[in-house]
Length: 500
Image (cartoon, rainbow, N blue to C red; front, side, top):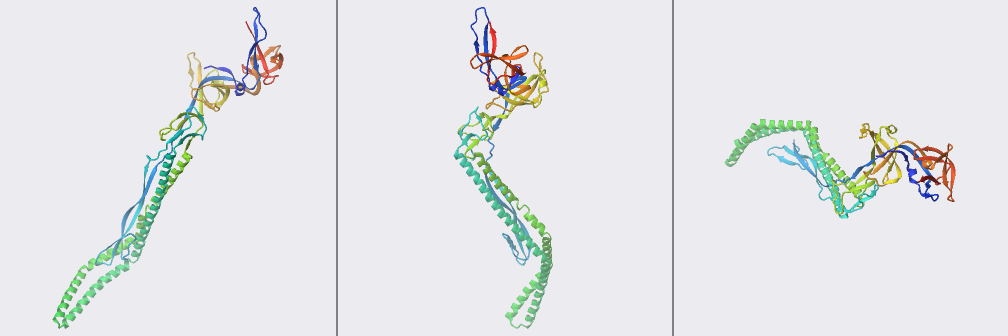
């Protein structure tokens, strides 16, 4: 790498002079020839500092196909469980099954409660976006929002149809879940009301049952007594036979009633206790029945929201069927051609990251003292020699490196903040670490300035083509060019020299 002790900033180089050589007179064989070089007075910045060169490093940005599209089929289903409630009302819950046992006035009903679950199935095979035309090529400079490629109308319409169907399916699933959960709540409320009512009437029902048992036995005994009286006074043989048969039947019923009295009374007590238990736990049983109700609706609502969001994201992504650039910069690669199907594993395009362009140069220990973090630097490129760009020092390495000549250097990383329209990794950059700069001044090559008796002058070419001696004041010089006063911008000055 070449070190330059002086550098000229953007304004200086942008106005580079047109120089020419010409002979003032014909030389003789024994004389030296005098030639002149023309230079122009420029306006700009005069910069002094340390210049080092290295290759530019450009980070790459990738634009990927990150649109996750799923054709989602959503359905709602009810998983029902039966809960029994005892009672004497004889009324069945909605959608309940009635079971009655003969010989008893009590009934047992089964109320249906349940939970609704939402299931979904995703299929990605049918959703494919196909490239119609690629609008950019490698090396092309683009801006954010430029069209990179277009998609076929057929693939867009197909994907849109499937995504809209997913929204419809999700909305139907939500309605079904809400209906099923409403039924579950209604059934659970009916069970709760039934248990509370039966619990409140349990004692009276129990006492009534005991009274019915006793009355039944008493009635049978009374009937037996009446039949015996009729038998004693009966004179008709046929009627007597019927009365005796009736008597035997009544005695059998009485015997059965007396035998089952304890069991019937125990059953009535059990039913009473069962009703009391349901009454006491009615609220807890209700809570169990409706536990989880609403979960399916929430799941379905989320599914609706997701499906709508997918459709909205899709519409924003495809817009008018174009894939737009997400970054500005030079295109370093394109992943698709016409007819290809977009996929998440292949980048749409890659770009040179204009925000991450750096160059790392080695600065010797003799010059490292002029380098500080965040210092502004001037940068020129071999590929764009007519302009100077800007940057700043982002990092100064602490680990020294040495060459065969035992020169110790330190790596200094510079972030390039101003770049040409097209910048590629590997381009050579000259970085000038500024030690002094004077801005917006007139300057000229040091070789154009002559000194005589402690005063400075220049030879200026006038409008007639003749030269004239002009006294000037010289300001800051970086060793190559110097600040000058006493002449005007654009003046043509002469640099004389002799050639044998």
